[in-house]
Amino acid sequence: MSWWHGLIALLRRRTASNAFIPQIDGLRFYAVVAVLVFHCAGYLSTPARNPQASAAASTWIAALARSGHSGVELFFVISGFVLGLPFARAAAGGGPPVSLRRYFLRRLTRLEPPYIINMLLLSAVLVGLGRAALGELLPHLLASLAYCHNLVYGEGSSVNFVAWSLEIEVQFYLLAPLLAGVFSLPSAAARATALGAGLAIGSTLTCLLTMTAGIPQPCKLTLACYLQYFLVGFALADWYARGGDRGDRSRAADALAIPCLVAVPLLEQHPVLRAYLLPLACGGLCFSALHGRFHSRLMSVPVLVVIGGMCYTIYLYHPYIKSAFGPVLVRMTPHTLPAAVALSGQLAAFFAVIVALCVPLFLCFEKPFMAVGGRKAG
Image (cartoon, rainbow, N blue to C red; front, side, top):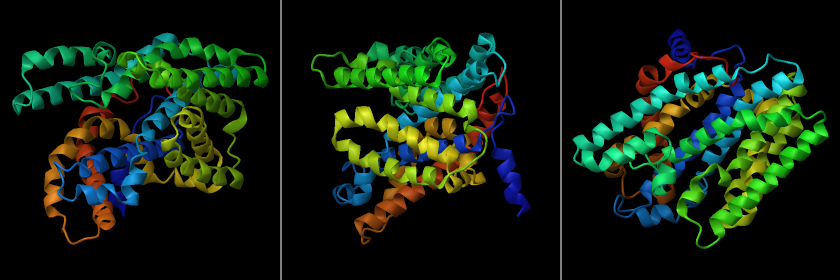
């Protein structure tokens, strides 16, 4: 099995420091799988794309898949943890002061090049296939490259719609050094109170902005509607920096993952409860992965860590791979299969094809830019 270990080594992402936490990439695996299932099940539940769409949409698998967009919020919690951890360690005396120059340079050298390449490649595909005229697409491309398509057009990028969440990530990235002042508060109670207040305010803002008539659409696609998720990540970073990284594991933390996972689909029907409780469910899942005996080992399984480490590439390219492969998959699926069996097989096939095709994209367009430009945990 030396070839397998060689493949894992080839695909394992590089980090700019020795602060690699495998469970974080395991959690990224959770998040990217949830997003893939959500988008692929949505594709298969559309009558214009799938003759068996109505049967697929009525299955319990499709109902569960409709909560998969919560993977984006899990990504936000993970980002809050990863960005907050160096600041939390510095405040706790367990790490060096954070250089803001390195902090911002990391953004430019690690994440910006793959994003620019993706936007340019997909723009070329759209124009080359006649799906868009260059003159019409260019303003959307420029707005996307400036991370302001949400604000200018009130919707996700016309080049790559999933970039809406990356624009929110950038807004947090810019504010994180300022918000990280919370780690300097002298007591755990003060830090918990400040972060808890921020969580409550963020959840309330989400309800007001998304459920109040007349609110402009661009306001719903800003950090104001998602700040609570990043702050939960900050709370996890504070716990981890002040003793949570010692390596002791708990079966109780394992058990915590179960209600957190169960809560995600249940909260879909209750928007207000979702705004307040989903951040806690995502945070509880992360805590379980970092602190549980079994869960932490599961989230350290090399294949899950590798796929989770490729999540940026998978996230950026999966919509186009899904659209290209979808018609072939629908034609190949026997119409005699029960709807739930057919949908399960189709989702598994989507996942396998997307991951396989993203491997060379990751190696060419993302991995070369890793471990450049500064320190970053996770």
